[in-house]
Length: 231
Image (cartoon, rainbow, N blue to C red; front, side):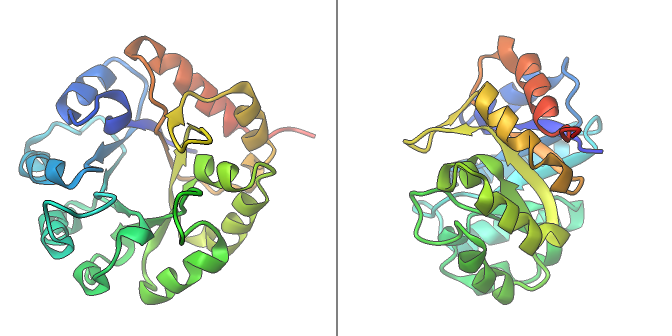
């Protein structure tokens, strides 16, 4: 069965403690601790070992999407405690300029498919070289990105066929034409339902930017989306 949860960055921009507080009373069993901006990473990694995450069956960390205040190697060094903790590190392939920095993470390096803003990582063809460079790495299937790249979800289906055996985590949200993460629509739920029977079990992390009052509803929408349609 899928474990469902949220990215902390979707619930409280740059404030993982606030996001964890908001999730305390929910039915979530997974969480992604977000440090999408590199200046957030040191604070998060300084705190991560002391956070009470015992209620979660699955915990991951989203690495920065680009490096400006930190070098890529410095960021990778900050993330190395994840290896001992067993926390997957979700990584945008287009952010990798120093591949050697990520050697040693093995299957805890979790590569994510990208949206239309990026010039790599959007399709199986574009992801294959990254998995060739990191042969032990796992896969984060971002269904919102895949649907934005191809509204028919043909690309999503191809990603599942090609990398389903590596699947460790799913990102789910509505992704706008401007690449913003929004609450799930009825249309996106219906589209994902048609593909759900092909998706292996994995942690489902919602990146939908929602008001705290909408957390439970968004979780219901996500569970509905990942329920296979019975034909």
